[in-house]
Image (cartoon, rainbow over all chains, first blue to last red):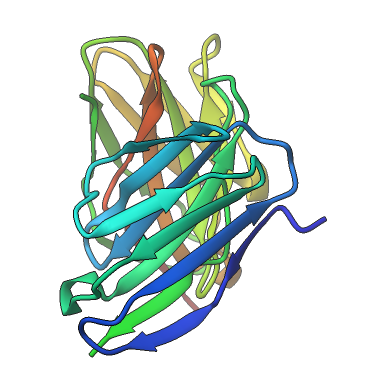
Length: 113
Length: 114
């Protein structure tokens, strides 16, 4: 019963490098989300997707891109990493109905030097 | 858009004491309300949710929350805490007409001391 799986769990990058974070869910959920968590700021939505092939911007989208080529996967890309992107990144998914909670992965801890 | 304020960033409490974690929200439309718990190095897990109906909602691990529409609050309570309740707690709100934007509070760090 995997739920939402994020890879990798940890990563250290140098400024200017690029990388992709992968999120996979096995619950057949329509909606998927990427958040970043910073101390004292809770979770802030970066991008989200309401279905395969669709993506949209959230609260803090700058510096990130996403893709949802398959329903079960949601990728978050950093094209040119900056120290301000040091954070813990969480992926979540939820069913179509808006009264349903989101299911979260265990997070990816990303440090940009 | 909706917003959430968790009034306490840290709440220390002794084991077996009662605890209340406060949450206030603002929205111009009807909302759904959630409390999540985050243990160290883990993602968020749902504690309880308010959708409609009874304003007192019971969740897992002995937690409950009360929805107060007039005060736009959704405070979380537990009558007797355990060491294992030490974690970060997040209040979240989503609007009836907007499934794409769940807003989270900044979190409350609950520390239960022996």
